[in-house]
Amino acid sequence: MHKTSSFTVAKIAVSALLSIATALSLAACGSTSSAGASSDSATTLRVAYLSTANYLTTLKNDDFAQKELSPAHVKFTGPYVPQDSYTAVQSGNADAASTGTGYFIDLVSQKSPWVAFAIEYYSGNSQGIVAAPGSAVTSLKDLYGKKIAIDRKGATGDYIVHQAFANAGLDASKVTEVEMSATDFAAAFSSGKVDALASFDQNLAAAEATKGARILTTGDKYGSKNVSIHMVSKKFATEHPSLVKKLYKALVDESNKAQKQPSIITKAYKEFGASDTVISQVKHFSTPKILPIDATGLKMLEDQAQQYVDFGFITSVPDLKAATMDCSK
Image (cartoon, rainbow, N blue to C red; front, side, top):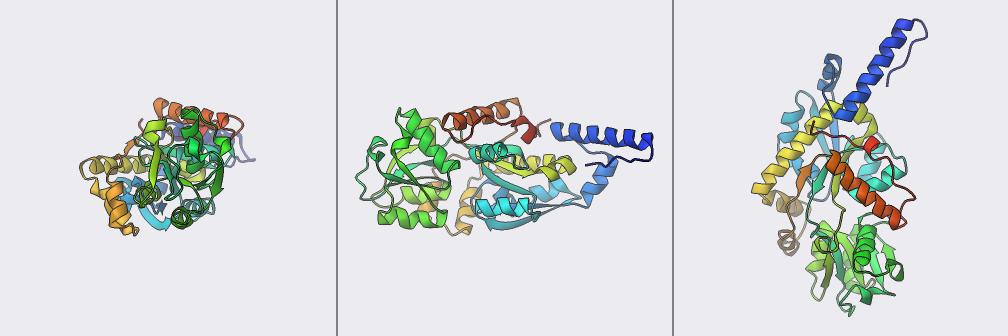
């Protein structure tokens, strides 16, 4: 962050002190100096929100974020499909986005410059595996030799397959995973191009609501550790840790509101074009809560990272502490 001067020892010392202060601020997600506060007030935090009803998305319909970040500003752009939101942040066109905890682990293992600051925790019943109509599949073992649609290798769908099969004492290598975009899921599922779908949120709801489909398992039954996570670019986290902390507080406010008014979530799905049938299914999903990435939250991520190693997704557990912020302090 700070460039040392070649002219005087004093300037070198000041630079070193500022660097230490920045590092401590990031680790604790604490307040900035008066100079930092001045910089923050002129900053706009740009959120690349997804076409799914997580709280970083639904925040755009409330004023919690703007109130918490004031006098800085927040700007929501989207909706994005996940991969496009990551590209927007990494290209410098946005600062914050969301993903699954598993894919975040994958990003960290690739040394991608992200910092996660909030976990969106839920029971897991909003992710799972559904057998396609006409597939004659009635159990996970029936999928041996068959095709399962997933989003991407190493992402949530891939995790669902491996964790569900491992929990059942089955071999996930005996099924064929077919990567495809979410927009292709419905057609592939209903036409018989795949025998099952491993997905989450509205895609899972749509599959569950399809006539003739069969729910084989959901995350609350196979011990899923995969939930949602909210993150900012490492650059933004380093330069504006106090704003990240304020965004965390806004997510907590939004979560607290949703516990009393779950319609916040279903309204968002309706906004994104979900049918009444899908929304009816979504209503059965658990209402998420925002948790900090404190010692407990970090342990959750590290446990899932070990699963990723066991599944062969990554070679070793990455340094997740260096890529997270505890905003509860």
